[in-house]
Picture 1: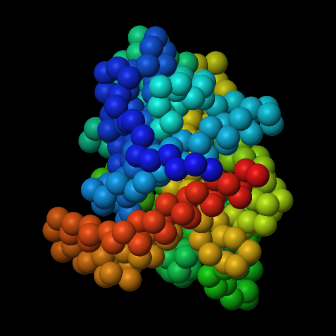
Picture 2 (picture 1 turned 90 degrees about the vertical axis):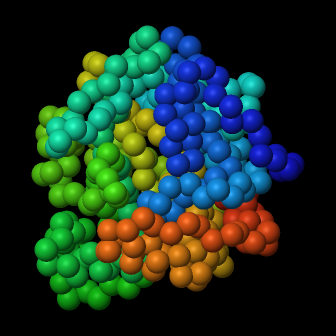
Length: 315
């Protein structure tokens, strides 16, 4: 794969929103452009100012192949096409977004003049193994929403990081601040605005996508740990994938156990004490610290991991 560089991330039309690592703009009637930047974010702090070479294009390339895999499997998504003018951008159907105001969720009209449905205001996560110590800590929290019954694991089985678990789908909030919150199925259903039947369809869609991704990863000598997506519901009631998957939104390792995702960046930040500083600031209700300067060798390592993820996952 040739060097891609930073690439153009200028909006096509009016900017709709600027996320941590994505700029969304109007591409036409009923169409939005999703431009992936070369920046990364971690620990719900927002984007790092450092720009990683190739990252935007690699994230976009991974997402486009993901959308094509979904289409071949008969799974609907909002994807329309890759933008011919930028290696960092793809075009998708416009979905109405949601806003949270004093505990209530409201739809926002599409700025494109048309829309095919609305986003569901949740993050959907599918897990196939215990990827972090945080998952074990949540399981041990008697006041938390995560239980062994939910993940279908007996009480007498000791879990550790790296252990496989039965495929498990859960949700977090998406619009709450300062950070997302894990939800019980009951609360996720209430926030989603879906019927129980539609919510069940969304869970089954995530399970279907997980099966496809696990099979693709295994075929190419990779191990998928977990991933997260946004979903939408069309105006005629169909649940669709409304998010581009990339090494930002999944965790996977190669045969040697090396991460090929954003964990390379997260782990380096933890080693620098950044995660501990963020947690301390939140506990004291203070502004989180600035990201540390990223050394060239760390930047190159992170980009190389994303590049290997694209090349090996989709070969």
